[in-house]
Length: 213
Image (cartoon, rainbow, N blue to C red; front, side, top):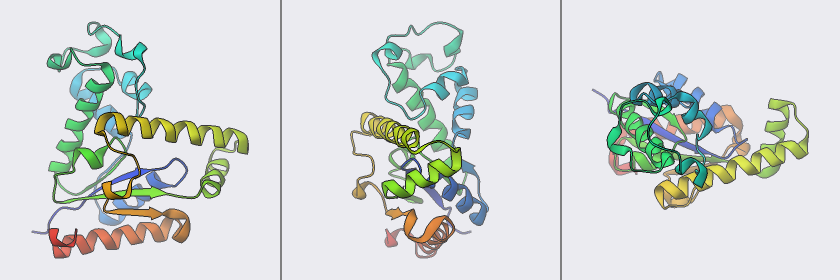
């Protein structure tokens, strides 16, 4: 039986990381998880999915952390986490979902600090996808049909949130090369060829085992 391939993809906004992840999962013939993780975490915990959505990959403010633990929005499960700030509670619940889907076999997981959550899993390949600012802006503008000024503002805001979320929950630095097995500029080869690069890397890792990393 072949070893499972688990790929985590952290990505800058506008780099195409999620698209690459979805295409990679299709080529590998395995499940793909991005925002799907939020619905799964909500179902598992009994917490309203809207709360997961509103705090997705964002560092929480004092307002959110000050919310009471009771009430239907939190559900009735995971009561042992009730003393933690809400952002930390949601992160731990999502982390358990990430571990569960990884334990089931090959998959591609985008964002949510999955590289950190699965850092001790020998089958996991940790990837960071980035691009130069102009390449990211071009992708955002053409994908969402918004002016450059708005695209730049959204890009900077989301990347700042992702960086803050990562550093808060991992005490590491988002995008730092040593946190990943592969850091790739998607603008060099484009989406499809970058996907093929990751596919080669993943299959090569699978064929030679842990020693390649």
